[in-house]
Image (cartoon, rainbow, N blue to C red):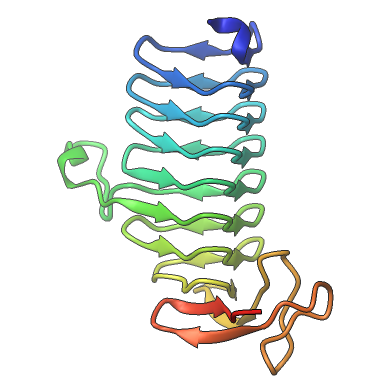
Length: 189
């Protein structure tokens, strides 16, 4: 069964981890118990995931990312190098607070830029793009372009990743969007 995926010999995968077909786990990574990794995921060097984290199909997790308990990534999420998730709002070394972990959800197709920080308890919308170095402390709508500290809505992006024009149309692929309760959605063609 192990032939269905690749784990570099320098990495550790605890008992009770589920790994989908075609997934790759590269150098010096650690996947903790109870974690589920979807098919065709690519997990870079020096990544820590878990325990009890769910990673969807086709995710790309770049080097030096830690994905802590309470985080869920839906399908095709991109996590840039050295970006950070938190899971406890007010941590203290002397006080155990894992029972207070706040869930974080990253929806399908979202991209999280290098060195950004995602504060626990937020949802990153479908196909949203969080810029490098951003600090996200509030929910990010579907197709939003958010960056800065704190991260703020700065525009909108297409599912293909290009910034939308003022009319909510993509110059690269001609997709058109409209506003909805979760941010933007593609209009019927």
